[in-house]
Amino acid sequence: MAKLGLNVDHVATVRQARGGMEPDPVAAAAIGELAGAEGITIHLREDRRHIQDRDLELLRRTVKTKLNLEMAATQEMVRIALGVRPEQVTLVPEKRQELTTEGGLDVILNLKAISDAVKRLRDGGICVSLFVDPDQEQVKAASKSGADYIEIHTGAYAEAFGASNMSHELEKIDTAIKLARKVGLGINAGHGLNYVNIKPVAALGGIEEYNIGHSIISRAVLVGLDRAVRDMVELIKYA
Ligand code: PXP
Image 1 (cartoon, rainbow, N blue to C red):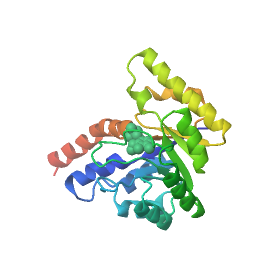
Image 2: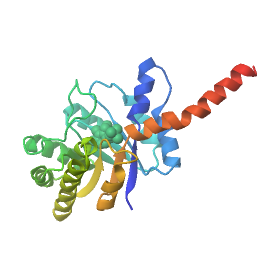
Image 3: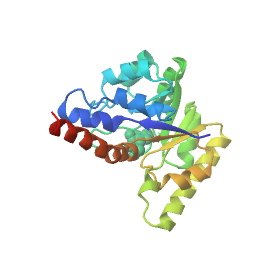
């Protein structure tokens, strides 16, 4: 059965907008687990724009399912991961100016540096996944790097316009799944997946874990707003 890894970065983004204490991604993670998420994903970025070191440390102590830390393959991040020991690290490319992770890792170009990071993390007992585009050469390079898993970047599929572009991108994902299986890599997927576009991907089979953030937190804001407004109206009216 495929699993949901809930990405709580956006909860931290809202908190950082005021620099205060709420909403707390640690509380969001606990609610997510109670609701059935089987993993919690966070991206500790070099600029700490949303998730903070404090979140990582607390989540390490509170997550009961599986903590998946997305991070760049830098010395600083590898050191932090080895100290905190999440169950899984997903290595992602990181550019300071980007709004979100824009593309998969270029494992072919950075094979040596990525393989070194994979080895250090695996030696520390951490399962390592590489975030890659559904590209056969990148999947082969991921296999050479010694990683345990790939996370297939579903962004191009999510952004494809029209049925034929979507099915073309879906085919690439399917080919990547088949190749990853053949070379013995575990398979996760994520980026841009929502309540509509998840179905055809899930129907492909072979994906173990979906890491989803934006669409779930967006829906939470809308489905939770009714209750939140009612609670405040009641306090104001009946004080
Ligand atoms: N997987 C990776 C590697 C990511 O960088 C992100 C975005 O932080 C996600 C999954 C989740 O993407 P989304 O927020 O679009 O669901």
